[in-house]
Amino acid sequence: MFASFRHVASVLGVRSQASIALVRRFASLPSTSLRPQSAIYVSTSTNPYFNLTLEDWLFRHYPAHAPLLLLYRDSPCVVIGRNQNPWKEVNLRVAREKNVPWIRRRSGGGTVFHDLGNTNYSIHVPRTSFDRAKTANIVVRALRALGVEGYANERNDICVGGRKIGLLHVSGAAYKIVSGRAYHHGTMLISTRLDTLGDLLRVDKPTMNTRGVESVRSPVCNLVESNTRITHEAFVEAVITSFREEYDVADEPCVVEETPEYVGDEYFKSGMAELPRWDWAYGQTPEFEYVLKKRFGWGDVTCTIRSKHGIILSSTSTLSASSTNIQATLDELGRRLEGRRYGFVQDVEVLSELEYRSGEVVQSEVGELWRWLKAEMRA
Image 1 (tube, rainbow, N blue to C red):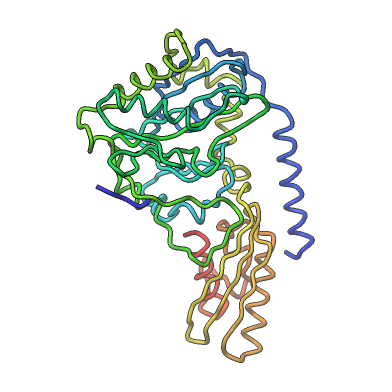
Image 2: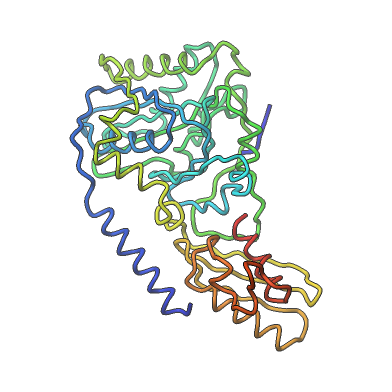
């Protein structure tokens, strides 16, 4: 089975406030009373906010000179790269319908789908010895120990039988380096719901041009198609063995549960709270431009929306018909959108009392245009 992966001043004011917030947030890390106890961690939590924070905590607090391995699974979610555009990468309508959250992780790279049929691994090493091919081969050897002839392609995706079975985050600079530390993390599709994966990652917006990183779409399949006996537990054991052999590590795995000890720690509380916040999830979106076209009974409209850090910089609409009154109305709507949060604009924010009555958008040119733009920005 396969699946293919208000005016300019006000706008600048919003952007400046966001920038200041970012500087404050990253100037210093939250404190922690916990210390890593092993070179091998296995999380039993399936909370993606917890696991992504655990990964970040280990990355920043484990000794920089020593290798570390983390393995975990998440409940269904979509995880996008640090420099990606969620409106370009995630089918937000399907995500809402299926009640599947999406999360912006702290590393780069492309978009992936997580569920309990997909095991995530994260290999941390000193920056001076960081080698993507070497860390990918740790996973390749684990697969071969399970009877699967896997290999790493030129992008260090893990493949079997000529088909990709795990989309590594490392593909397309999907790794993270901070000071003297680096990590390479990836996903292994063991028995994931490929139909759900396809629905959530299938986005058709060819006229949305973004300055961020776009995912490389590739055909994928599950590992159980090569060996029906492979399970999450078997894969975890095989990767641990391969990691130990590569780095001569004798530590016993530290099994982590989502206990008060962790979730009550200031670092974990702060990290888990940050990931779903608007200023991280949407406010980190790189600049993009979206050109939309639609035929109305009163003329054909082309609308161009520019956004950066989740804030609408400009919205300009041109009308094919020569109606000065309608064009002036469209121009005014565009001005009202400036400085608003893309995808989160409410009717009362852009429509006058005459255009919005008793909680309903009235039937008018501006009402029709706004209903269309609002739906497109939420898609």
